[in-house]
Image 1 (cartoon, one colour):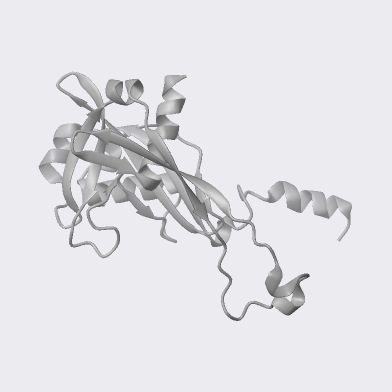
Image 2 (cartoon, helix red, strand yellow):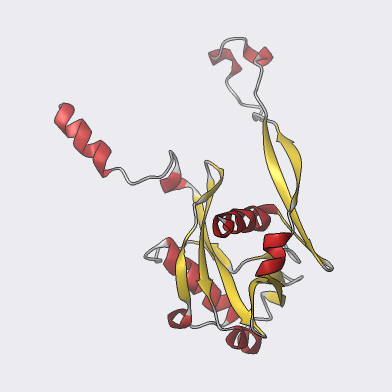
Length: 206
């Protein structure tokens, strides 16, 4: 293999970041709905019977299956499964930047316009406890607040300290992540959902 082949292989590489092909990949849809003449963002409250994150506030979405032809396909499929919305009726506005929570976990968000009446008639109550909306103007006018969280590496007991300089005295570098919070009535939107929501609001505010 020579330099021309190296360049060809590099140009073929489509990964957004190192580890994307082996990461846990999810996709979500930010549903924009019109309620009584006002544009709103719709959220789900996960059912309390769900094994993963019961009661959390989220956007419709989930893991990208091997059979999904694209992240957008997965987001629309999950929206159909959770909210009962026919994928053909969603007006997809476009993608947002992927949210890379870690090298092993990435979320691909999309925004789209959905028929609110279709949702409230047919959402999956086994997965979704309730749905609620927040006016877009409210989100544009009210800033979220942020709390920093320190994340520190914790190597397992078999980590080969004998292979690295300073061994067990190696100074691991922690990192700070930002946890954002939106308040609306009795609802607190935080975590991954808030991070994606903030990115969306920042984009449309421009």
